[in-house]
Image 1 (tube, one colour):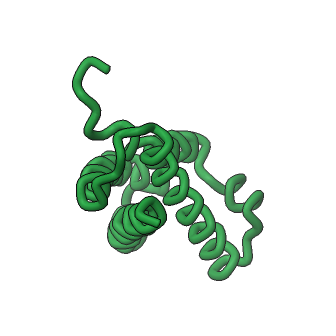
Image 2 (image 1 turned 60 degrees about the vertical axis):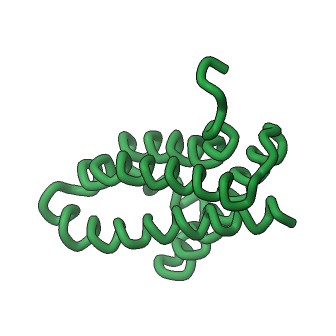
Image 3 (image 1 turned 120 degrees about the vertical axis):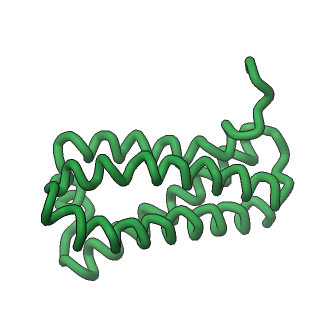
Length: 132
């Protein structure tokens, strides 16, 4: 149960920050810089949010240092995030998941995919002793 709560909170923190950043990126940066540059500018900020949120959730819920517990938390959060993202793409734009993925920018899209993998892995990565 602790892992489920941790995953839900981790998702909420990162998705909430993404919503705030997107609310700034879309009306202010995209018209001036284009989608690709605007998304690439946002990604380091999202990575910082991911790291901070993962550390906070791991500490707050005192998740065991096992890969299973921490990776499970990250994968659960990723699953919720993908469901939310695809639901929004369908609900707001009428896009299927395949159409949504195909609509991603050819440069920022793959960087975003890597960021999603880091999002899933980060709870397992944070708090590790250095050198391991």
